[in-house]
Structure formats: structure tokens, C-alpha cells
Image (tube, rainbow, N blue to C red; front, side, top):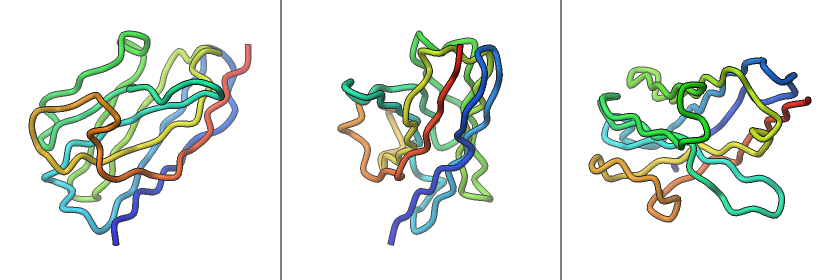
Length: 125
């Protein structure tokens, strides 16, 4: 059974930082592309960042480029999202997802096979 469990969300002031983690099980993790997405109330789920199986390819949404960093640990089967210089518009539920295809690194949420339950990130102004 595949499981993705996010943690690390919470309430932070604008300009602050949070680090999200997504622990996985039941996957051949080191053969999966991993992604982070977010969804605010009344909006569609949007791409935030993704990372290839090796960590060598890491596309980002323009809105987070330079502020967020995605990384992975293929021993711990965990993917991370370091979020710095947070803004109120980053407030959302953040989801991690796994794409069983190693390449190419995809940014369309419809291409991802497995999803976590989400973790709330709230940035106050």
C-alpha cells in the first residue's frame, strides 16, 4: 500500500520560513519523480516544485523561484520543501505527490499517481 504523509505545515509570519516533509512508503521511491503542489480555497491545484529521481532536475513555479527549495533523500524515502521569505499569497494546503515515471519531470498534477493528504500552510501579514 502506497502512503505519502506530509508534515511541517503551520502558521508563520510573512518573511518567515517553514520546511515541509513528505515521508513515503510502498513506493520504489528512487525511481519516482516527486512533486509539491498547493491548493487554496476556491482555486485549482497548482504546481510548486518537482524533483527528478536523482535530484538533478528541479523545476519551480515562477511564483516560488528563489524562495523555495525542493530536495529528496533516497535512503529515507522522503522529499522536502524548504520555504523561505514566505508571503501571505503562499497560504494554501500543500500536497506532495509521486509520479511513477522517472523522466521527464512533469508539472501537470494530472500526471501524478499518488498523493498525500496535505498540510496547511498559513502566512500572516
